[in-house]
Length: 60
Image (cartoon, rainbow, N blue to C red; front, side, top):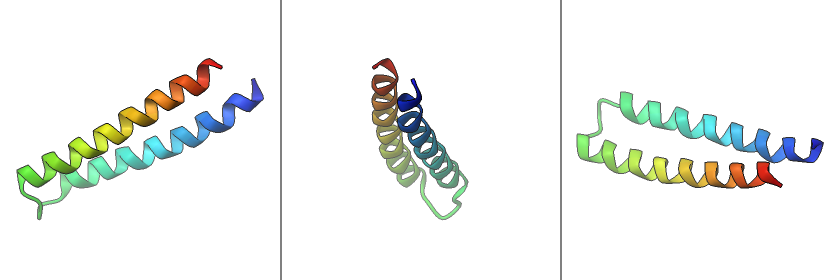
């Protein structure tokens, strides 16, 4: 069980970073709505992949 914590802790840190980037994109007044959508879509894909990995790591 202790071995499971490290990958999940790492995933949590990455998730926090991705969420922070998403907030920064949303607040950025220099980006057009289309640019924001493109960046948020890419970050959402990245976040979803991370969550799939984290759930898989937690099931072992």
